[in-house]
Length: 189
Image 1 (tube, rainbow, N blue to C red):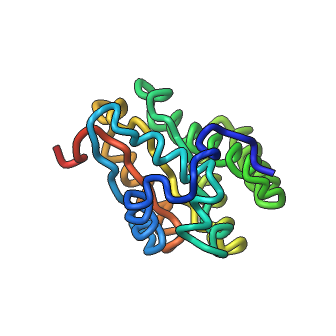
Image 2 (image 1 turned 180 degrees about the vertical axis):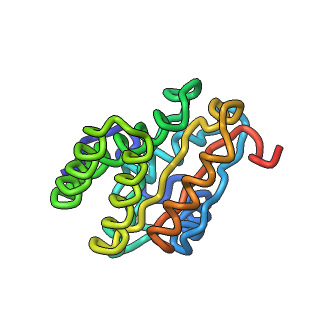
Image 3 (image 1 turned 90 degrees about the vertical axis):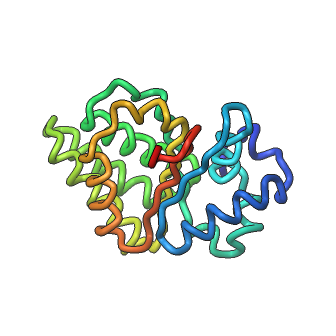
């Protein structure tokens, strides 16, 4: 059973137009940007995807269980090196699987995380994250969508390596992986 969150109380048609566009990209395995001024509700849209089952049902129907949205608040890692960011993504993935009650997937991904963490090495940790994404995509047939909230706080620290890591994850999961970047202005700027 999903934990109650304020976003779970909204009706299924809340922010329907914006969510439909994000879902369209996610279904195709493409990444997207959610751009808007501060205070317009970008974070709320991401929370609806994560916490509101009725919203997911409206946009994904019976296939909503095959799409897993992982909320990652980048204001928590804005000054951190890439290794810490990948570790944070892995932690959020593990916790989100538990929260959505994907019990067997949570158990396996949690095991991969603990094994990878034991080596205390960035490359081994990233290898574990690749293995986890591959497991979700190929064995569980779950599309994982990383929702990068407040990504503008990390933009000054982002490196080419970060986007290379995301590309590698996408290649491992094929079209069952995407990312949504939540920003104040487009990444190109």
